[in-house]
Length: 326
Image 1 (cartoon, rainbow, N blue to C red):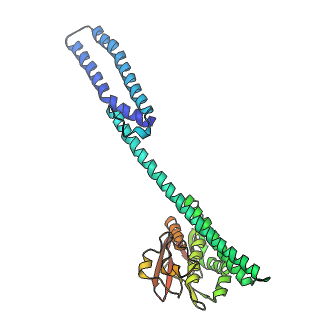
Image 2 (cartoon, helix red, strand yellow; image 1 turned 120 degrees about the vertical axis):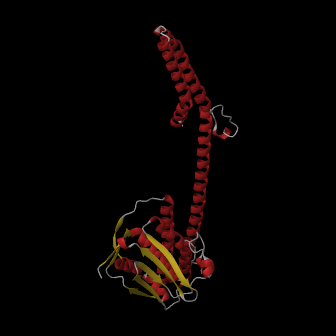
Image 3 (cartoon, rainbow, N blue to C red; image 1 turned 180 degrees about the vertical axis):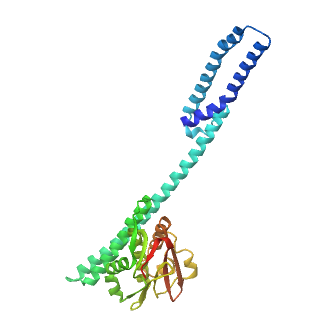
């Protein structure tokens, strides 16, 4: 506020100062033209300058005191008495409006994060409860059942952690050249229990020799989310195609597909759509978070789908961020 005040105060005294100097110059010119004693001009300066300085200091002090003791809540009732006060009140009102908007945005983000926390915690508890029930009903629990529930609980825990990282808006990315085939194989190994449980077959095409420049951790997260969606909506004993075509990584399932109406909203926070209502595992967060990640990074995300035929998730990269040894 001090900087703005002095800037505006200087503007407000600029014209009076110029007028005072002009008047002194005019008196000096008259002294020369009429051969008046120069002491006359000196006396004018000597007696007028202290009054002018006192006026400047007093005027500035009064304005500063009024604004210094101005309560922000009283801005609407405050009546400016000069241009400086008017400009500063206007600036304070702008700052007040910006602060209110910022507080509202922070509150909205906080509420959203609490909703996500409640949702993910609920899902994790469901899988832990399922494991507990299985253990109580039988002294021996099938390893596939344990792996499936642990995998799903871990999935929602990762969603929660990455959602928090995105909310913090930390742009500490580590860009490096990533071998797509190696990354996909690692993700498939981590999800092998789910593939086995649903008898799904991953088919890889054109991935060898492809490298992309981006953040490994977030690319891993995006691919894992898209693969999880493909697994979730695939019919048992079907295939999931993972391919590289036209500078894009494509993950295609042959499941129920997405309706045209739902396609318009699939990236909305918490939207599950018709398919989501038919499965208890849907939270409407996966695609929303992937879209959020790609908005911060150097690749794009899109979805194409035909109802009753399947869905294809596409991660598209810029040519400059791709290396191919093929």
